[in-house]
Length: 59
Image (cartoon, rainbow, N blue to C red):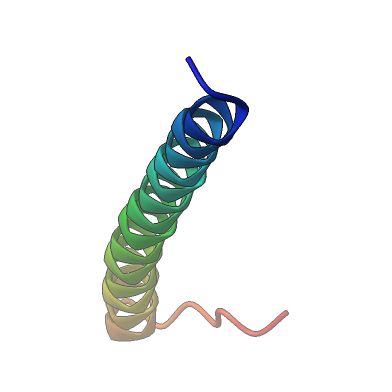
């Protein structure tokens, strides 16, 4: 193999690896944001229930 061919192969693997890492990071951030929204909804629901029973949720 020529040196330029080896370099091109290594460059392709490098780009593929970086792409995979960014896809994984993006997926993780997406999952975290969905979990956060779910938790926020649960906290709001809990605060509504507390207010309904006359309990203050102020910190």
